[in-house]
Structures are given as structure tokens and as C-alpha cells.
Amino acid sequence: MLRDSVLEANGVVPAKLDDEVAEQLMGEGVDAQSAVALAKGEFEGFLRSLRKDGSLKPFYVPRDTRVLDYSRRFLFDDLVNYLRVAGFGGGYLFIDDMENLVDQMSRKDRIEFAKEFGLCSVRPGYANTAYSFFSCVLTTHQQASVGLAQAWADAGLSAIARLDPSSPNSVELAFPSKEQGRQIIVAHLDYYRINAAEKGTIAPFTNDGMEALLQEGETVHPRVLLSRGAKVVLHAVEKGIKVIDGSCVKAAAASQSVTSAPDVTEGLDEAL
Image (cartoon, rainbow, N blue to C red):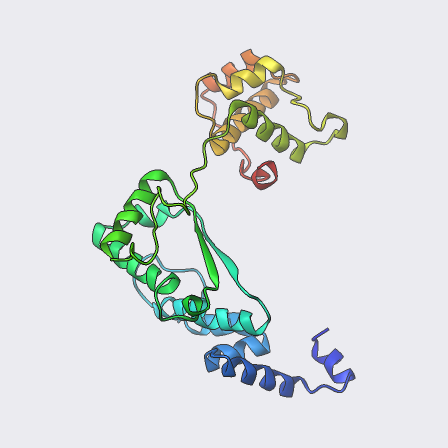
């Protein structure tokens, strides 16, 4: 609908419309350069212009940090004001696998990170906090959450908002039960099935094959379970086995053969 040819056919001058949109965005607090790039649909090019190599992939060492310095202001100021102009009242900001960040930091770095995150999320200074726009959802494991909670407290932020495993806004997710693990396997198998008649079943596994895969007494971790299942299926294919029973699962576990396996996380979202 907003292609230049369509706009012109309806008597709208695209360049003038871009200018008016940019002007409105600037009037709502969006930075001028961001406003123009957003209005013209050229924001990706604008971000690339902030890097000498034109890449959007972040560095893992502090160099050429202009885009990183700008990213906080864009995400918590410009983007918030842009979405508010578009009629949004809020949003969720998901940060997955926080341990990949927190576990690599020294205590001093964790405190600095907590200060920066607190400034962006709960302390005055950004449009995000002024309008309580983003609700932040952090996912991590227990150890990393304790380290982040300690840094949050050391940064003096606990009086503003709690961020610790025992706070009311923290939710601990237990590992799946064996039955839930079975459901994950079935859903994952269904994702790849050719024979629609087998959907919802454990085929090509037998009951004792499924029991062996779930391994009595062992914690059911979805990614590990699916990885183990992929190895078993590949073993069965190599040996020409059509029905996977307990002995097949055990033989696959004992096998030392290295086979290139597909990405076992494909279909994980659908399975969960």
C-alpha cells in the first residue's frame, strides 16, 4: 500500500509524506537521524552506516562501539517513542540465556551491567522508564540469576525493584516430567512425519524403547533428550532397523560411531 507508485497514483507525494512522518516522530522525541531513517524505511542502512565495515553483527571485544553506544538510546528512547506514535501502549523485551552474558563477567563488570540495565529499565533517564513501556523478561539458570541478583543489589537497585530468584516476579520452571518428555518426543516426531496416520503416536519407538530413551531416574532436559533421540534414530537408519525398541536405544547409546546429525532444535518450538 505504501509503495511510491501506489501513493503517487492516489495523489500523495512520497517525499512529502516521509518528511511529515519524520517531523511527527521528531515532535514526539525521536532523534532526527532515526526519525528520517524510520520514515523513509531506511533504518537498516542507517545502522550499517554507524559501522566502518557496514556490518550489524556485534563485536565481542570493545572496538568500533559507536553503534553499540547508540543502541541503548535507540532501543529505550527512539524505538519507544516511535511505537507510541504508532499507537502501541507497551511491549515485552525478551532476553534469553542471560547466563551467556553474566557468566563471562567479573564481579565489577556485572555491577556495571546491572547499573546500565537498571538505568534503561527502572531508573529515570529514558522514555522506556518514563512511560513504563517495556516489560523485561529474562531467562537464565539458577546460578547466573544469583550472580545477577547480587550485582543488582550491589548497584543499589534493590530498593527500586527486586531482581532475585525469590522475588514475586521470578518464576522457576521445573524440568519436564517423563510424561511431558514423552509428549515432546511425540510432537518432535510429528514435525518430521511423512505418514500422517502415525501422527500422535510414538512410532517408530516401542513402549520399552521410549522408556529406555527417557532413562529412568534421569532429569529430562528437552535439548539433551532430543539430541539423544536423534542419535538413536540415526543409529536405526544405519542398521536398517524399522522398529526402535529398548535394545536399539541401548545399542545406540553404546555406539561410538560419529554421524552428522541434523539440528535437533528444529521443531523444538513446535514441540514445546
